[in-house]
Image (cartoon, rainbow, N blue to C red; front, side):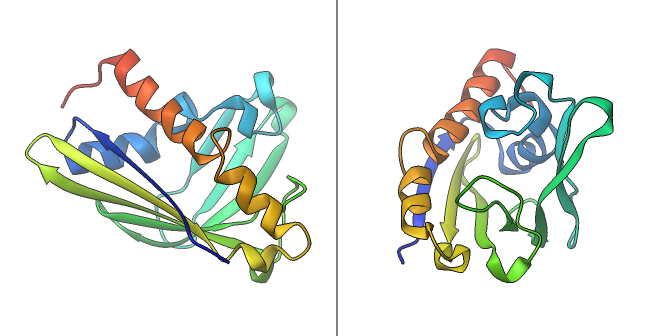
Length: 158
């Protein structure tokens, strides 16, 4: 199966963009891509190898949806994407796809973010449709757009 690749550019230095992406995910991640939706309390990625990707909803409801497989700050984070094609948590990492997000300084004040989502076949039944959904305008394009919109709205500076 193909590698899904999306690329965006932001007008901020690499280290700053990397930190904002991880540390402020709760502020910019679209609620439509959570189980808690409008009652979401927190979404986070623990910034270390083995760290969990977690959503917390009301009354302490917690759902782990991934794990940090590798992290090289401020250049790259590799996650095991443990969300099945049916949009339910998949606790078995052997049935997870992989998500790698790289942050590359392209000029003094610009960073290119490249997102690659691959190994969809690990999800089994529904993998091709899952790939197609995440490759659509309602998939990673929407999620990355939310990040750049949040940056623009906040007028985030160095």
